[in-house]
View 1 (cartoon, rainbow, N blue to C red):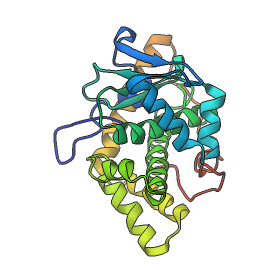
View 2: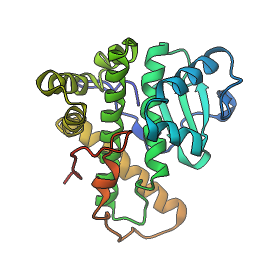
View 3: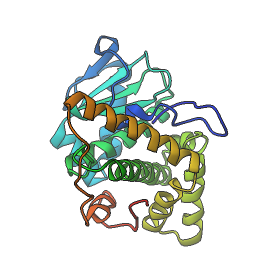
View 4: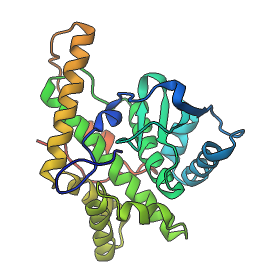
Length: 256
């Protein structure tokens, strides 16, 4: 989850963080190891809220328990608000953010953690086209699930995370779509599906993530001294990816 970009809506210009590139040095981070019980200060408060908030969402809570990522705060982040780095199992959040926004963005990153644990993340063994398509799908899913949880927390009396996303430039249109579907049907599964689809309605958002995914892919090929991959996306990719935290499927698609 990132900060500002030029143009009509700030937000995803430097999405490298979401794709696994770490933009800050470890020396500038304050981290807490699982099970997060001994944390103090800002990182301790965030870890405690995260564990408590996700306790009601089995797949996310289980991902935290099984993968036990290091939770970190970084006060050098500028564009990025948070990122998940699979190689080191770190979830890094920008220090000093509003605590409700910190909770909203860390939920988003825990969804990426869960995706990684379910082995749905793309690799450079795929073709570039399929790599880009699946990266976009992962981001749409994390945004949709993050908004579902923020909505659910709001219904339970904790409105802060939802309110921060409702006015955040990368998520305002998605929050509006989720709320509109809830007003129409009252069905969180339908609202999550509608929000996933809405992620692709913004051409600029799609183009930015396609560009960054392409850079990420080509850099990885160069680093590993490999030729472009040839494998295709598994037929059950969308079915595997698009599940609510309690296991219910929601309708989604792999973008063309």
